[in-house]
Length: 79
Image (cartoon, rainbow, N blue to C red; front, side):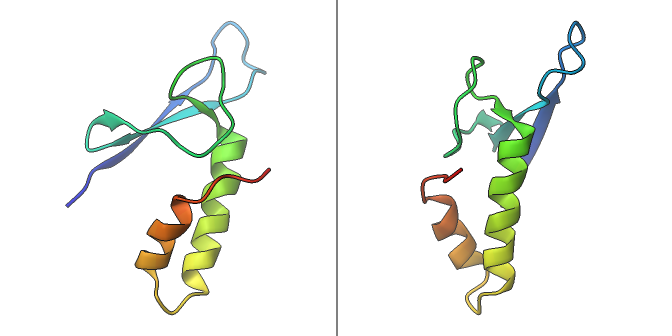
């Protein structure tokens, strides 16, 4: 079993700033193959969403399903 959590952060002093997201895997901060921000372990929501939607599309179109999804998340992010 695994526990995946997404923590979202919006700067209350600058509501128009990028929405940030941090992923926790089994309660531990997870690094992602995404462009870095100035805050460690936080990534732009737009980058995160694009990355995972692309991975989900790969999984849905694949006969191997989840194992292909895991392999795909290990590949570098391309903007």
